[in-house]
Length: 100
Image (cartoon, rainbow, N blue to C red; front, side, top):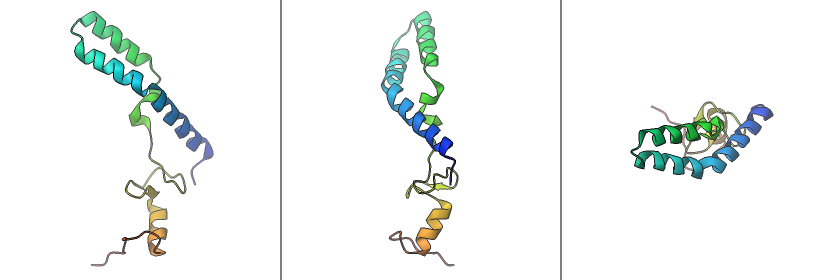
């Protein structure tokens, strides 16, 4: 089980991402369209003033059951431990234990 503080930190990041997403996209589109170098640098500075935690790449995928961030399967939204337990208990339809 993940620490509650880490899960809360992730929730805070999600809120920041949603809050600044439109502003970030607007500034990036202006940077692409402007040819004036000084204006370009000014827009880059505006982009850098936005909080770092509002970047989409700072978001971490977590298991919805345990909150574990490592060993995460996107298709199921589960960590490898929970995925294994649930598949052995036949709780995931279409998932079989492979044998070769």
